[in-house]
Image 1 (tube, one colour):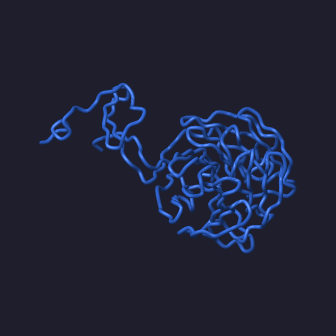
Image 2: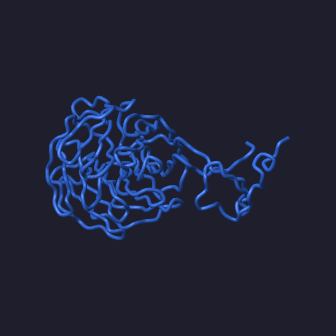
Image 3: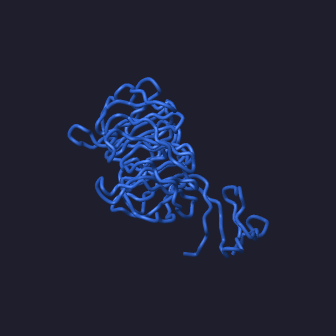
Length: 316
């Protein structure tokens, strides 16, 4: 029977740790974990991560893996909403600075130290704040109930839209809000991805009547356009790689279906093992991200990976 050395001309490398930049097809034995490993490729898959310390739903997410951020939400109606936040290092969640107010179903975007959290249920004027990596600062309120608002960008420049009680777009320039052109299709329970001048909003439910939608809207900084619709319809609940460019991202379209957009077409990729809506989620590209919490006040966290991935080789 042919062996690895017969085929490739050398023995499998033995290492105390995984290589920092393995190439696809590379195989090695890790003596620390006592496992045979190789570098393969995944079109997209979810795996379990560290649990949130307290389960909650209707929370918002920013950042990425291994630098994720989850904030707000709660275990029930307004009286149970929280100001708590947690940061994720790829293994475990740690308490972050408390927000200036309690809220849920709000827009959040940015990296951990550039996060903006705007609107949400439980603060009718649309109270908003920004984070510096340690503490939150109040900023001018939106001026309306920002329930189900979604956003793209960061605390220096952000664009928000698809709030249940307003069809307008809202631009944050770092110091004040400006009202922008209304969305051509007014939905709620949507997702947002991109930057303040290149933001896409997807799916959701129609404010008038609640019908499920598969729409794919893009804001270019001055006007709206329609792109190829998603292959499935329904609420997305903010579960998207919301720091990614609009030319390449993943979206948790309907539990547990995950879709990838490559700039021209949609592909179905890996599914969640814990189907949920209303979880904190984010990512900086179409190849990575996280979802934490959500339906049923779960504590579950899952991480998304696509592209080149390290895998443990077993006989099972």
